[in-house]
Image (tube, rainbow, N blue to C red; front, side, top):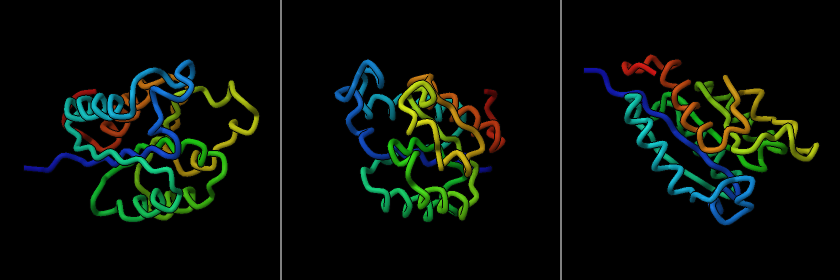
Length: 152
């Protein structure tokens, strides 16, 4: 019997503040609420899911570099590092795992500095502006890409 594809969900700086930081932009639910919803959807899709968050670029880079052999795909919301981190881009390009980039807000309707994403250069897809639903759609896209046995 084949094992379920495993996905690593990474959240970057300040996403631990969900529910408290600018709820009009990011919503009122906590990161724990978001992770619980993602775990439920991953289970429905026949995916294993591990969730991690860090405010430190190096931790995210380390987790990406350690992912091959443990995980089959990545969902990442790099937070503010989206717009600044060549290190995240390099790590994602090095591991070459299927990757979906997610942003709760529509970064293209915000400040000009948020319009550019280094991470997008390594992502198979990018979902912006759909709030928490974007994470669930990212899992659906990875399930399809990874050939999960459950219909999306």
